[in-house]
Length: 160
Image (tube, rainbow, N blue to C red):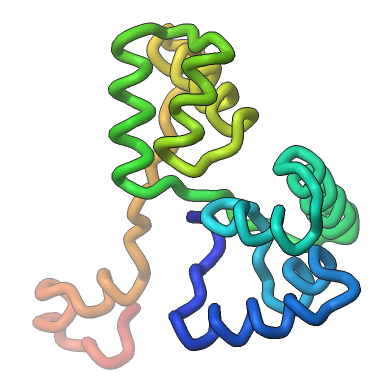
């Protein structure tokens, strides 16, 4: 998940507070730092009386406002179980119809638009139009500084 999931006690406190809140989604986003519907969609729907789509739209508007103000929003990361379900469904068919998307959403807890976006991106990746994001490990200066060659040199403490 993109946001750091809260520990059990913090989650309990969050829900106890949100039950009495007049601004459930605003506080969910701004006070508790939860930027995605993810695993809490059923609770949010029960507290607000809104559909999953309406909740997602509201949270998206908060993220867009933050983005416009220069706030970095972490990319949502999928759990290994979610990724397994997505890849299995993709291997069955590269195009998911509405029924398939609903089935995947029920299994993974992801929203329909997340699933269709994932499918679209995966098709582009497999077609070679884009590449998967891999974090490149950067060699830091400290690695060179503490290299055997540098340590054994005559001017080790000074050389960088």
